[in-house]
Image (cartoon, rainbow, N blue to C red; front, side, top):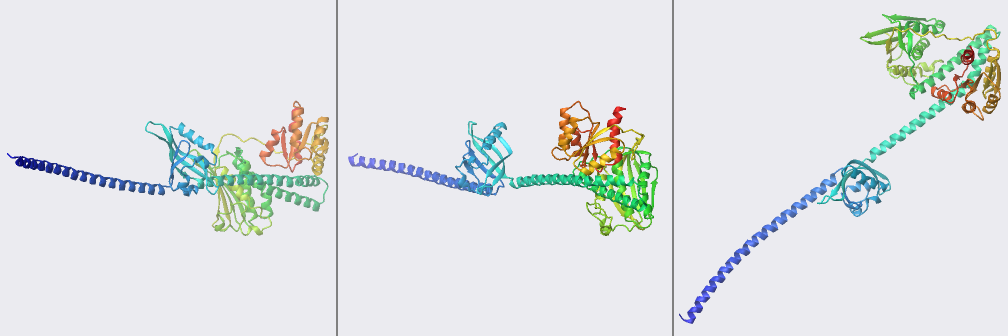
Length: 561
């Protein structure tokens, strides 16, 4: 074979090898291009998916009612959702990189927040805190938060959601303010009523006392009628004052019921007798009628039940010009429960149906009653409703089929075999000759009329009295002399009655001289204050003669007997 042939063979072989290698390389390149194209497509899909997820997450965060946040352990904001602008007035961009403590109303609360997370295994719910809004106002927030951990479990930050409860907080604060204002108003009202009671009762004490003294002198018929008219007017005024004070006590929850055994038939007959003169003066027939079986003795608060029934009968007589007023009583028993039903039925003009619902409201009167000269305060029925409510009962009114009104009350009662305690009410003093002679009493009162009245009443029975017109004089006399009893006014200049009493009790704790508070303060909690100060009893103005001597009998003569 020639050299040329060999070259030709080599050329052919190299061509074949080169072609083969090129074909293989092209195939690999084509395969790689396909792989690269696939990879690019997948990356594009992943990128699109990631962008879509980020947009969806942003929409979710923006539409959440709560604001999402992340911070590092130092409180630097790493991320916060755009809704934060609605809470604090700052954009998310403005807050990222800022320290949260710069926005706390009290930066120390941040440390307490971290402590709470630590103590609760790295998670808290509804944790309250307050931040400062861009406009300077305080924003109250609650957060659900947890610690952020790295792969090794180390704490690297905090994440959570926050929600404003400023509206609720403001409502709570407004309620607290309203409550405080209401309590202040009630306190002011109570103070006003106490002052009103004092200012009215003090002059009334002189009027009633000296009117009673005048009635015991020699008077002709006309003069006696005048004195009786004054007494009647003063009783009416006292009833008005007591109504107002009762209403205040009930409103403040300071009125307590005092139950005891009562013979119900005798009790109701006595109430009827109290109004017999008023009914006779209008030529009205006043009667009591039991319905069915009435147990002999029941347990009730006789004072408050008498007050309710008296108000109903008094109104019935007042607004009935012709006919009758009837009091009925019935007891309904079901198993072991018993209910007392009282009705006061009159033959007056009745009450319009539309006024039935509001007639028991305070200071409310029927349209025609306001034109009557003796229409009253409009508190009687309101007090009656509140009193019967304290007894777990009900009260209402209905018109009679013929004419007039029918007021009714229902209340649960307890039937008992116990007998009522016999209580003797003395309105006259024991005039046994010389009984009170030698008794020495100090009368301390800044009102000269009150001092003169008490001195007159006591001296008529042989009691020796000395006067003090202020607390300083009263203290000096009490420390310098020996008295069997001291009547001590509460409101006096220089030293008041409480101050004088405390000094006397502290100086001579072994001295048991009775000190009786002379007071126009009729509220029970006020009188309790006097007892706690060291006084032995309270005598509320206006003072009646028999009350003075009952106290002398109780605190002096009984102890010496």
